[in-house]
Image (cartoon, rainbow over all chains, first blue to last red; front, side, top):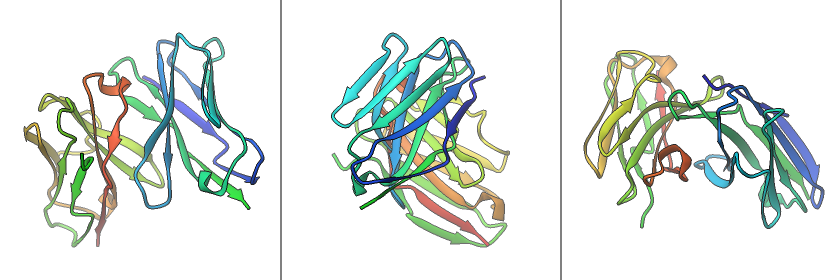
Length: 112
Length: 115
């Protein structure tokens, strides 16, 4: 089955800087990789996703890149703002069952 | 739409008691998921339903856990008897026909504390 590892576990940046969170996965058949943002005490919410037929996807200040050969994908946040502070989870799809396997999360802190 | 609705939002119970968590998915969604979130284990899928039918319950930790979906607008997750290690935030989520490759909309969660 799929195994997803995420790093770093914590990340602190200054407002306006960029933040990068990386995930690796084990199942080469995985083809769907979403990213969820969870603010403190709130529910996870999808912020962006990428499928294996695409190498990069952007949505305003966030982007995700996928390297299927190396089996890793990354979340990039540019021009970070204090409201970007949250825990970010990556996930890969387990093709044995189709379910999402989540990484352990990255706590991002953006300092004003 | 009000989004996914869960109740109760907080539950504190004594070890050995029965706990029932409730979920109302977004109308029209075909899939319903139950997740558990803890610091140690992160976000884990417990069980999911497609059109009210349980598809995969391999994530249910023990026989003490059971889930039902009697109709398209209601699901329950029951723990009987509860144990302190069951303390966690339980999320219900739903999605359209794409299932896991569609956006999963999470409810606000139920924070369960078992004393």
